[in-house]
Image (cartoon, rainbow, N blue to C red; front, side, top):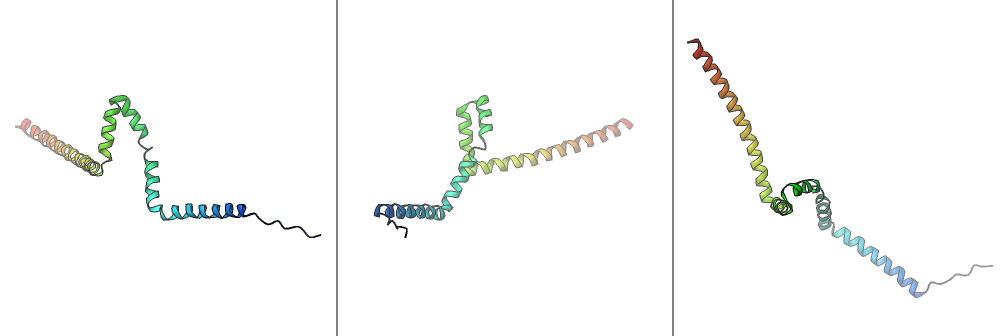
Length: 117
């Protein structure tokens, strides 16, 4: 006995076609939008990194000041200036330490020569 073949109704065919079209639209949107969506997803992940620092600072100096500090740091030009200033500060501190050691060493040798006289 042959098995009867059931024909799909037009509603089932339309549902299957709409699922295929929708999935191809989503995949195409994700593929062509990756240049925009990838940085957005990365930015969303990176926003959670300073959370522990923010909570500690909020306890000490308050929510408004922390908000202002982080808003200023979000501006790229100010952040780069701060990084350069910190780097220059480290160089300046090393230079001051070297000068003070050289100065102290010079004074120590001059005191030793003064004692001999």
